[in-house]
Image (cartoon, rainbow, N blue to C red; front, top):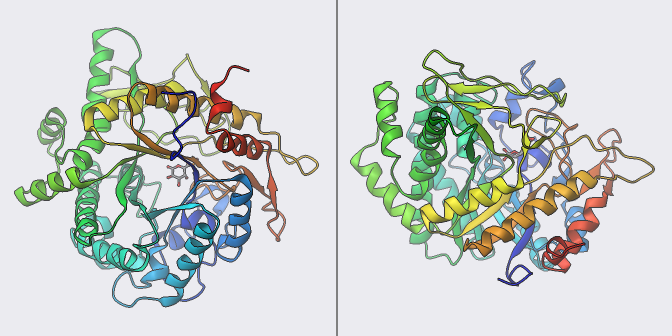
Length: 476
Ligand code: BGP
């Protein structure tokens, strides 16, 4: 492989509807579970919400202009389900479709490839109320109908489709840690709802292929590869257990159509394995073959150690940005995630490990033999605005090292279609408010005009795109 990324490689950036759009009650939009969750006291950092967010809904043309100025090749965004189907199903709101047509057209006119996420966590409240949302298999039909509306509307214009964003995270935070809606803590429910996400993925992949659309489709999983904390056999064992119940668990069901055997037996022993019918297996396996790529959101790696059966359980995590609050967390009898002394950490105690991205890409590509797409990667930080400038050298450094890791993985044979940073502009962090920033474009949330200001990293990524990554790969 040469010292550049291939011509067709998509250097892009990503966002999600709830985190940028605002306009939460406009043009007939129905309520999502997030519209309501943020109103419950104590659920988000200092009560922040996405009512206005970056006001992308009204200012997308200005944002796309900045993307064009940078030379961005792809923009990943998500559709707000309740803008299209305010009650979750049935009546279609034309104004919702119009908005996304305008956004997509604007991108295409500016030669930016739209990468469309169908679901980035904002479930219609009606479906949550009616049957518990992801808790019921009824979600499969409603979601598939919603996806079909999108295929019909945008199928000719959009060539990259991501069905679900991080199903492993929204089920874990919603059903295991009670940090996202609907705020439950139940391992059983977590495994059950995760199984339903896989079935949704499978049905939607099938619907897309049956529709004869010419594009690529997959889902994006948050992937955290793990190392053993030492060469002690007990820690090695913890690492294997982590893979069987976390990494391969979340990936295999989407991209092989079955759960890893050891993990399934273990959860069966514990009486919490999800029910898998013969019909499920049939469609899951079929869809696994039909899925075109594996979306990967990569932020960090994990260090794993032995955790006895009476060991530590899950703990919540740093949402304040006060560095040094890393807490060990684990599943008794399986593994325990410990502090990694070999890497730096962000202010939110996320391990910065570019080589983990290479490891992830190589192991995923070997196991599933499919192209990969990095749909999110980035660093959340407290950025300082000083005289209309933001010197975010740490972001440039982070992105540069991770882009190099992608290139390394490609040299090892990984078929990587693209790389999207999280995020283009600053935006709402679900639990961390507006103070945890990820963008190339700073937004002054204190100013009601929400001015957009280019950070130093903007010029860096512009150069990445212009040189096809060569500026990251050559020796300075
Ligand atoms: C991913 C989500 C994104 C985004 C990102 C950063 O899990 O898909 O929506 O929020 O993480 O996370 P955070 O905002 O918690 O720092």
